[in-house]
Length: 421
Image (cartoon, rainbow, N blue to C red):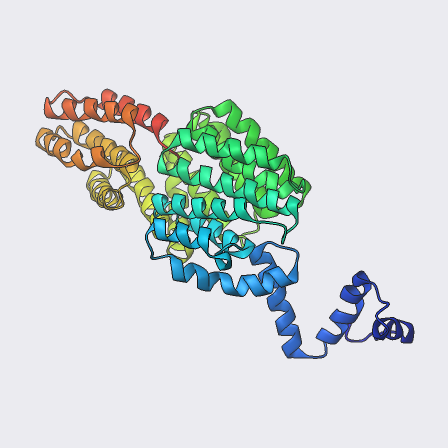
């Protein structure tokens, strides 16, 4: 564009106000933006805000998009009731952009603070349901469907599967009046597949995630397709199809551009190592650990590093390095207990118990039975899983825990576990 110029006819049409909007945006604006670095920077910022706010209208993106972080900061530390009152009583808080930033913040905090994520999603639902004619009605339907899906996903992570199901039903209702954007549908399907997985309805989960994967591929969304493929492998893993999960993860890793999608590439490899360890293929898993460990130290979240350490402990144990494994299991167990992650803490405790059983360390087993008491108070451990933990605890106390029983209890608990992202 820098080497081409507007024709006399185009300039005449522009100055007279007779130039179409399409020609204005495709010819005039880009030409002038190439001549002024400040305007070009402003133009790029507008495009960034449009993507962040996820709205086609530049006015919504700029005016609301710049204000939304300030509004969020003003309300984020207030009690939930005060946050809801601000949204319901103050029109300044009833905007598309604030709804979007609440959804993104809910998603970002869902595994660190799931209760906060639920509250943020409920605020987003309130805004979306209250948006009026200032926005396109089909776009509002998109936002409402996504808001209820995010609420359902946050409730799922919190362990409230019944209320999560209700939220997804509301999302489905609102999806009928949307723009028909395939990416909106794919996003909702992907979250619903996670709910079906946690409900242990694996065949439904696979069907839904396959639909999402097809939509992402049709739209050329490489990130969405990669994420869905990893999620599909997770469903296969939890349904006991470990060889199929491993094969799919290898295919997925080969298709991800590590430079363009470093985090996605890392998560796929992390899941592959985990599947290999669960399948008893410990030497294969160990071969992949050094590079994965180095990359995780650079770009992974703290909780992901803890999970990787857990895998390292499992591999070390089954390759005969018991002292190393015990130290790792202890550290990981402490991390999970500190985060209130009962399921994960319980599973690590069972692996630690298996180590003690094999080394005939009865006193350590009995001490472990006492140490798992905080797990019973964790919010994410429901009644069925607690029954498994009671059996584990009593067996430890009565010196009746065998290696076979520890393995069976771990398998039972893993079937009940809400899966991580």
